[in-house]
Structure formats: C-alpha cells, structure tokens
Length: 553
Figure 1: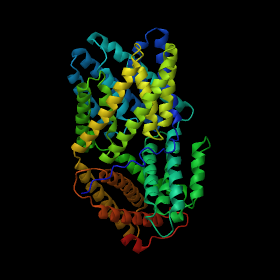
Figure 2 (figure 1 turned 180 degrees about the horizontal axis):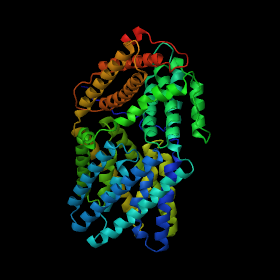
Figure 3 (figure 1 turned 90 degrees about the vertical axis):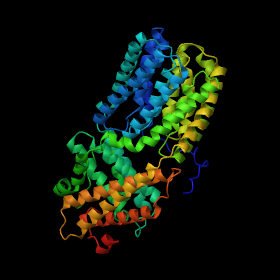
Figure 4 (figure 1 turned 180 degrees about the vertical axis):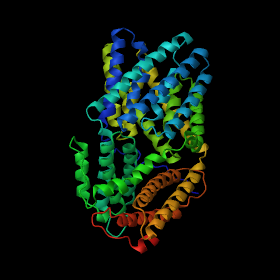
C-alpha cells in the first residue's frame, strides 16, 4: 500500500476560532489566579507548581452538559492528582533520571489511552502528561508528598466550582450550543447539495453529520425531559436535512440555531407532524440510543494498544535522548513526544510540525517577556495569567498558535521557585523540542497500527447491517414507526463511525490495502436508504412516499 503523503502546505493554516473559546480561557484564568495570588501573598509562590496541577483541570469538559460536566471534571481532578502523586512518590524514591523518564513514559501512555478511550476531548492527555512528567524532576521527600497532593486537590476543587458556576445562569447552555452548531452545519450542507445527489459535497456532509452525532451525545446526557425532547426534535430536523437536503429549509434551520444561541425560549418545529407522533415515534430512536450505553472500558482500550506502545516508546526514547545530550529537563522532550500522537501517522506528522513551529516561536516570546517578569513576582503571576488566556484563545485556530503562548508559560513556571538562567532555558527547550518531535515521530512510524484496518472492516460491516435492517423495514407494507426511527438513527450513527474510521485508517502506514471502493459504495447506498427512510416517515417538509427503487439501490 502506498504511504500517505506528509503535507506541509495546510498544516499551519489558521481556522476559525471555537464558538466557546472564551469559556475555557476565562475559566482557567480564574482557576489559576486565586491559588497563585494566595501563595504570592503568603510568600510561597514556589508551591504554585502543585496548585497548577489542580487549576489546569478548568480547561476540560466545557462542551458537556452540567450534569455530565460535574462527573467528568471530578474524574479529571482525580486523574490529575493521581498522576501527580505517582510522579512525586517516584521522585522521592529515586534520583535516577533514567528511571524517572521511564516512569514518565509509562504514565504518558496510560494517560493517552484513557483519554482516547473515554473521549475526554481537548486538551486531552497533554496537560496531564505535562504535570506528571514535570513533577518527576521536582526535589521531593516522601513526607512532603501528601501535602503537595492536597494542594493540587484543593486547587482542583476550586477549578470544579469555576467550571460549574455558569450553570447557575444558563443550565442548558452546552446542549443548546451543540444543537445550534449541528443545525448550522446541516443548513450549510442543504444549501450546497444539488437536488439530484445524495453524495455531493462529502466534506461538508461529513462535518455536519459529525456535529449532529456529537450533539446527540451531548443532549442524551442532559437533564430535564422537556428541554431534552425539544432539542431532540431539532436534531432530527438536522438529520433530515442531511438525508434529504433538497427537501429541507436551510433558512429555518439557521433561524432555530440563532434562537438556541441566545436566551430565547427553545424553538419548536412548526411542521405537519403532531406532538403525539413526535413523542411516540420520532423520539423512539433517541430513547433507544440512550438505553444502549457505551461499550465496556476494556473493549475500548483494546484497539488503542498500538497507540499506547507508540506513546510509551516514543516518550521514553525522547527522554533518554535528551539525557544523552546533557539537557537538565528531559521531561520537556518527553512531553513533546506525548503531545504528538494522534489517530494516525499523518495527523501525528501534522502535530509534530505544529509543535516545533509553535515552540520555536514561543521561546522568542519568552525571551521578550523575561525582563518584564523579573521586575516583581506580581508581574510574573500576571504575565502567566495572560499567557493562559492567550493559549486558550488561540489554540482552537491552530495548535501551533496556541503553543506560542503555552511555551513561554511553561518556561516561566520554572521561575516560580527562583529565577533561572534564561539563556540556558531557551537552549534546553529548543533542543528538547527538536529531539522530542524527531524521536516521537520516528516511534510513530516504527510501531505499526494494523488494527486500523480491522476497525474499518468492523465499521463497514456495521453500516451494511444497519442499511439492510432499514431496507427490510422500508420494504414492509406497514413498518412500525418506532422501529423505522430506530433503524434510521442506527444507520446514521454507523455512517458517522465509518467515515471517522476510514479517515483514521487512510492516514496510517504499513498496513494492507484498504477497501476504499467498498467504503464508497456502502456510504452511497446508506445515504440513499436514509433519504428513503425520511420520505417514508414523512419527516421532510413536503411528505411523499419512499420509492421502491430508492430502497433497492
């Protein structure tokens, strides 16, 4: 199989900022500010490295409904402090840099696969690996560990409160935003798709389908039956626009999205379907999806074994190489390697380029800021807060742009205990960045991931089986409406998974040829079946009946 190209042209291209970039940016500033200013007032800013572990938990779970966010953030805080505790205990028991790097690599691999298996979302494992790896090289005794972990837990509890506070004003804000995003992308696809094709503009449709699928997951974990059902009705309209774009109304989808982003009452689809039909039949697929549940964690971890090996090997070798070069902070190389690993080799290459460019630009920013931060420790704390905000404001546009702020912030944190030789810091950071990126990428190439092809085969089978179920129901004279809705929802979800799996497998090296023609055929057939299902259900604007030829194609 020919190896995928390693692109350069679009790797550094800037995207539009995230719709909610300001939420993690403001949350992390508030979460970091209080502990740091308290420690500054007490003259113990050297302890800020421990409170930062808890404070940085404020970066997570901003796209989740508040009930789910409370649980996820609690686990993040526990995971963060657990990694910190392991690192501090290791640091107190041994002074061997080789052993510490090995522990750091194993921790980074565990953090990577757990974040991927639970779909934690950005910043995923990178912050966890940064904290645990840096903590391995802090001077430590066993007697100090409990106190330092308690500081992290206290700061983590404060971060939890900061992230939950907006729920007092907009208790359903996350699920409303997710639904609005899905409606907007569905409207954009409906505008572009011609009336005689269900396969035009695949990238636009893929983005919209992924947004709809993500919104379903968000809404499914929301509290409040009335709100959830209202949002589910709107998501069904977005799914209809993907299945039958020519028979949808993009303007109405956008109007609903605008209402959702504000504080207006939830919009209500005003079509020919009555409420009883919507509740009993149209929402049956949503209820079925909530009842299914997710696969056990062990099953989700299995396919990630190659990624775990890549991460452990790449981080360990990067740390060892840094030690061989005489760098005093090998954890920088370790964290650089840990930050690279994405779903496949091609995406890992993209992240390597972004990391190197961002870090090299970041050390220049650090050099410019050092004179200001050494005026007074207050200036040091304020500059770090500004960099926290800047990192979250920019990173959604491109990873390298956010790294321009993350790099100087990481360098300045080393000065909380005492001022460092800035020239040596810059030299070591540049060396560790280059070593970590090079060694980490080589490890990604060396450790093959043949399971990507197996996962694609399973995803293909799932789509074909879901399509057959829907087709059998469509062929029946009087299919049960609830069963037809479940079949449509199952087929739509299977299509999203197939597209994501196919894209991940296409960027992987050293594997057998992928069944690309079979993927295209399965997707085209499934989309035609979805369109026929929509017509049979009468969910589109002008009800018609599914044609037999649509079902058979």
